[in-house]
Image (cartoon, rainbow, N blue to C red; front, top):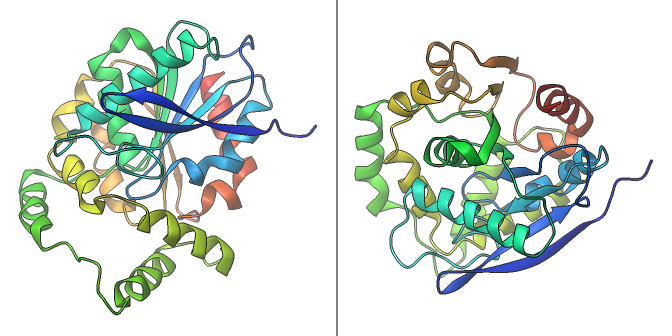
Length: 272
């Protein structure tokens, strides 16, 4: 069976617009699923993955976080709660447009997207059914304070373009070695589109996951992959005693394109 095509569109939000990808048609057996990306990427990372998940009769939405991809930035320095509110507003828009049914949605996030998924469930518990975390940035208070203090020193674009080479080298060092040059090029391009790369990290560092996760009552799953948050994600295990935890240390950045079928099966088994 061929996977459904994904479409792209915009929704008005505040004084700007949210760009999103959507696959699947309303009226299926499953609640809509939001896929939230890491900083500083966009919903692009889920294009193949969302089409595969839509095959089972599920509407799948991959928004670009405000300030990333093709979404306009928020007017002030954003907090995770602002990102969560933007996604809930997008859900309202999709209901109004007849693209999804009214009711709770499922949410899955990766890195920053995981934090936003947590806040969506805590801030609007009746609007979220199940939550999936692909890695969690479990920094304690001291680590978060140190990282916030370093944000003003975030690297800026260099006139000679050397910042692009540095980013290429960094992204390449963090990705699965199976990714090809074309994927790496697109990945770096998505990073460079960010209006303020540091803003998403600042929102994450200001958010206390150690306090938030124990408050989560929704059915949850943590998929801990072998990326740069593998050890930090393990700190979440005792805070999510009822969660379904999967360790996949052989996976890394690029996994949604390289290990699509494996991850789709894990998601579908959990969401039902």
